[in-house]
Image (cartoon, rainbow over all chains, first blue to last red; front, side, top):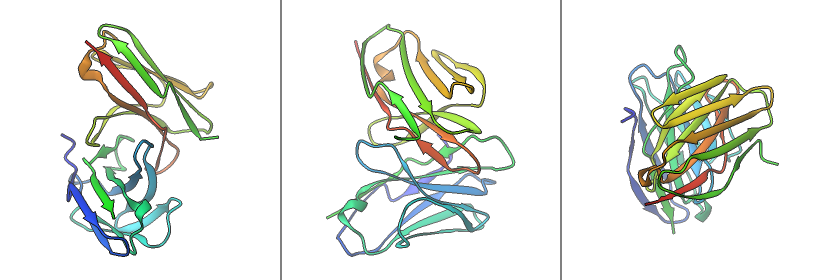
Length: 113
Length: 108
């Protein structure tokens, strides 16, 4: 049990739609990172938020956006869904005043049809 | 060439065998993580190390910073160890760069 939760667990959307995925971090974890994991591959970094501001982004288009809230929750929003967006989406949080250890949520499985 | 390479990609072992999974990376890092992922997706952090060796139960992780190489060892493997094992490095901030993972199957 990592103390990081994600919702929903599974989601099916249609191409062109928009989706919001949620992550709730441990109290005190001021940094959250989001990753996309396609089937059979390692996770790919989407972006990172620190104290409610984006402070790092991977090679993902602007239709991937996020928010981080003061209550240690965060969101990943994806607009204009494409079939290739089908993947497991993981969030990971850490307290930057502590060690480098990161705590992963269980993931949201998104299927785009 | 990927920044982090794992080997082997797939590994099948008999219960009780000693298992080694290797990870090589190409950049200077602040920390190296070993993670376990079971079917269904959830990722569990096994180790985070920046030098030397760490041990937890039957799991041992080592890292050689000069050679940019890390290994994960499992002693007395058990079918419940069957999972995907992933190494990931961290350079600055919280961003992790992951390997492709090693699918381990331990047969009874």
